[in-house]
Image 1 (tube, one colour):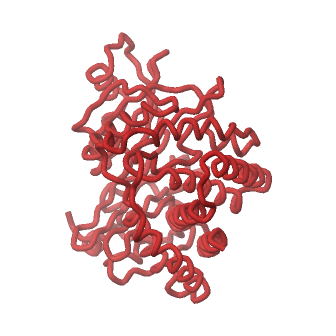
Image 2 (image 1 turned 60 degrees about the horizontal axis):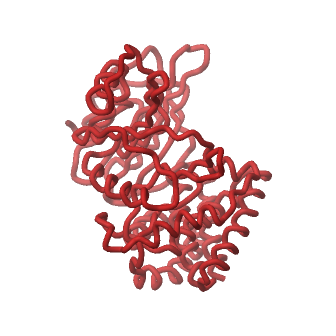
Image 3 (image 1 turned 30 degrees about the vertical axis):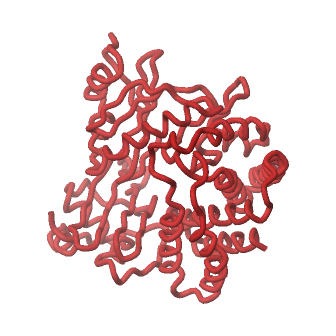
Length: 415
């Protein structure tokens, strides 16, 4: 494996400048090669040096997702897009740089961090794996659908075998055991939880039963408000478990807060107004984060996109890997933070629906649980602070405006 500079030197010359979208101007002088991650021609040269040059060049390279730990690591997911009359499928790939390590380029499904992805995403190996780790099926065919993929982190596929359909979660192998512990906790909550159908631990793969339902985020956007009591009943079933039952690591709020703060500090170096907004937020949040301690078993990443609304009115939790020692008020605060973000940045009708449910859910939680409004506001604020990383993680042309407005919302919550 060569460094990024060496890779570029050996790559084929690309004569035409390839635009990158969106234009993304963040500097990180402590991480060699960082600026090259946002130069279309350089990025395409890296791709061609690893995989060879296809017939022609894409008309643009779109930045799909950025994971940035300033001075330490950056991973960017791209989509190479061709013109329709080129009859070329778009190509998703990733480029990763780390301090003191060689750069790496990889594409779906060959992800070095997810050893089980390549086989579970390919038809014949997937069928063999299902027969070995899940159940013996007479079917000779399997349909594999990609549901979600975050390079270097996780993927979700769907395996269809006639009536037997499974969601397949692919992760780093060291995450499997903590996730299984988290699953055992949430199974004792008041939520419906997918059944574990099979596990290939060395590959970092879990097969989960498919639950028929509608994504709760979309449900709320369309104005279908689930009774807050349904969600709170499910959460209280989790919160009431003895904290000693949690074999998973306690939720690391301080670490999550520090990572977000570092990213914002680097991203806003040249924006004096936004830096002042950030300083106001951190001045209020830092003492709370320093003093925070886990008090109960909790979900620790509770928000609407993690759940399904079932036809009979129940709610299913489909993502629960953070469950363990945490804070009930932080669960509610995180849910409110995501609703507030969507209410501010969403389309008018959807934003109105999410804003209305924010008010309903917040009032129901305070009335039912007798919490301090100030304490809940602090938790919603710190969770929204973390949600603001979406402006960087999923960059848009107006990312800097979105980040500034998100941090302003954080300060408004705290008055």
